Image 1 (cartoon, one colour):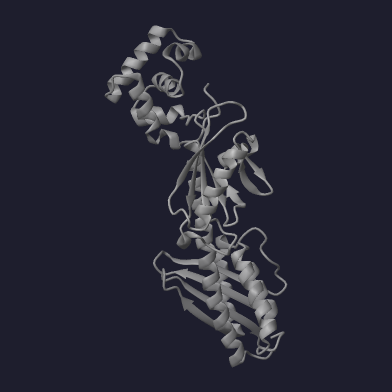
Image 2 (cartoon, rainbow, N blue to C red; image 1 turned 60 degrees about the vertical axis):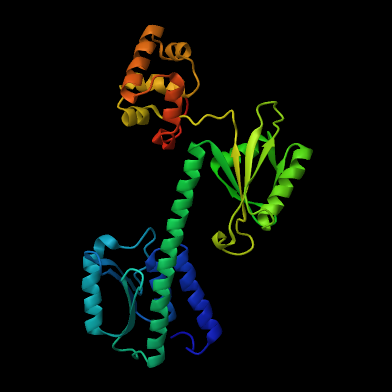
Length: 354
């Protein structure tokens, strides 16, 4: 190897580089190349086999002079890689190790090669392979969990936006950690809420004192339950509704900068609009009936809905009667409640009523 196996510092730096490569989402080929270079090998193969599925999941082979794959691992050439691995095992010195995931049974194997004209691998280098393959398993499993968590967070955030609820996350010191798209919009408007020195503040000084008290109580466990606040808008519109909620300690991941408080923001003047095609599919309506239902749900009167659609009031009324018949309701207010309580609000937010 290019470093003494007992050099803890140098091995630690190498180990960190491999770990960072795995967690950064870089192609597995990059980790293989790091190992090949550090261990003075002519080739390195990493094989990941899902034993609960159809067989080979992934195989990458990094060889001296071959370069790296820039945009991803070479899954389409798995058959060629398998043939090359078999050839290397027959014609080269090799050391390797394997480990199996206790969580899902996936097998991770690492093979390191040198030409027969070079010296073979000693026991210490074989031990390094065992350490590396264990880290490959841990790193890839953690990377997968982090990726799944990020997808889950994005989905939750988008659902809150579609429900017209903004979310802002604060750390234990009251600093803003992140926010949903709708939460960021609410802060940018500076109409009831604003950002000052990285912290969430109410635009009214008197109300800000109550907000800061609620945030401190939630962050430090003084108030274990949610607290609701009504914040005045500078524009004179209806007050913002704000809920300050502590995040339980067991759900706070990471260091002290992790989110400790969730702040939910609801503007009573915002409407959870629905997409017409989803309304049609969910309630078995015609396109014309869905268009009327969508406009009534958005707060338009029947006359305004008819004008918006360029149809007569009698035609709009006929559509409404048909909607009532199909939905088993008898009043327009029931229709609004039915649609807004349905899955239709979870669809893509419409750009406007067309």
